[in-house]
Image (cartoon, rainbow, N blue to C red; front, side, top):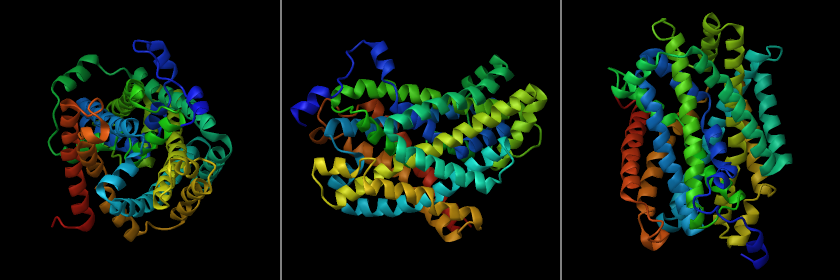
Length: 431
C-alpha cells in the first residue's frame, strides 16, 4: 500500500469507543439483510405453524452459528490480507477453486431464479396490476441497474433503508400480537426438539443467515477498507449487531406463525402460503397488519436480491483473478464493481435465471444444485477450523480459540448431517 493510500485509509476506532464503533456499522447489516430471504421466512413460518413457540431457540442458535462462521471468514481475511477463496486455493489446492466455480455457477442460476420469483410474488401481493413474472423481471433488472450505476455506498444506503422497512413490517406485527411472555420464556427454558421435528428444526438453524452469501462479507469489509488485525473488534461488533437483527427477525416470523397458524390446520409450504398467513393476520391485526406483513416480506426478499446481485459477482471476480494469477493490485482491479468481469457476472445473475419463470423446474439442475450445495456449509466450517487454528498462517494473536473452535465443530456436525440428509433425499438413497 502506498503512503498516500495509507494516510487516507480509515483506522480502527479506539478500544472502548463504543459510539465510534456504532457509527461504522454497515457490512454486517448488509449480510443480515441478504441472508434473510423467502426461504428463511418460509422455514421459520413452517416451524412456528407446526410447533408454536417451542422452536424459538432454534433461531437464536442458528444466528450464533452463522455469526461464528462469518467471524471466521473475516478473521482469515484480516489476519492474512487474502480472501477465504484465495486461502482455499493456496492451502488446499487449485481443485477447490474449480469445484467451487462449478457450484457457484449452478447456485447463482437456481438461487437467482428463486429470488426473482419470490420478489415477483411479494410485489404482486402488494400491486396485483402486474403478473408475478413481470414483477420478478422488473425487480431483477431494477436491482442490476441500481448496482451498475450506484456503486457500493449507494447500495449500502438502499439496503439499510430496506432493512428498516422489513424489520418494522414483520417485527412490528409480532410486537402487536404480543404472545404471552411466560409461554415464550418457558419454551426457551425447556429447549428441545419436538417429536418428529428434527429435520425441520435443524433446517431453521441452518437456513437462517444465508450460505454462500456469507462470503460476501469479506468483500464488503474490503470496500469499507477494514484491513488488518486491528479491525477485528469492529468486525465482531458489526456481526453481533447483524445476527442479533437476523435472530430477532426469525423470531418475529415464528411468533407470527405460532399465533396465527399453530393449531389452525393450515399448512405452510412456500412463499404463497406465507402470504396467506398475512391474510390470516387480518383477523388479529386488521387491514393494517396485512399490509405491514406484505410490505415487510417484500422488503425482505428485495434485500436478498440486491445483496446477492451486488455481493456474489465479487466471488466470481476473485476466482478470475486467481485463475489469472494476478498480483494484489491486479486482483483489486479485477474485483472492482466497474470491472467487466463483475458486470458480466451481475448480468448472468440478473438475466438467464428469468428462464425459470417460464418453465417447469429443470430437474437435473435442481438435483445437482441440492446435492453439491448441501456440502458447502460443512466444507466452510471444516476449512475455517483447519485454517484459522494455524498460527503460522494467521499469527498467534488471530488464531481462533477453544470456544470458537468448539462452535465450529458443532457447525461441522450440524451442517454435515443436514448435507448428508439432503444428498440422501435428493438422490433417492434412503429407500
